[in-house]
Image (cartoon, rainbow, N blue to C red):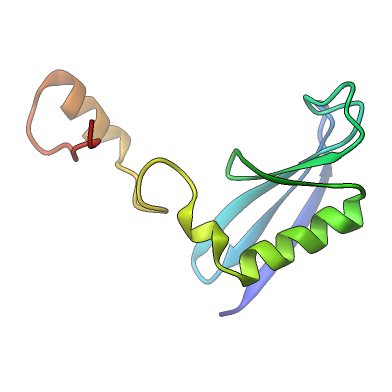
Length: 108
């Protein structure tokens, strides 16, 4: 499958951010820089995919290589509490909260 990584830059919170496109699917990528990005005393680059911490690396290049391997092995398919990329919509969530039918079960 055709996969494209696009890096956008560093945001004000100290994260290198970008996306990975795989067909019609998109994943948000974030790398927390040491001393910034929620890692003020750390020495590692923390790696996040769609908000889930998936690993650490000692350099930005190492983090980017980690992400490439992460996607090559298909580990991105199993992120999140619900089935990947099949999370219920806001409308379904509101219906379930109001006790109306049509919401997916959360398995609780």
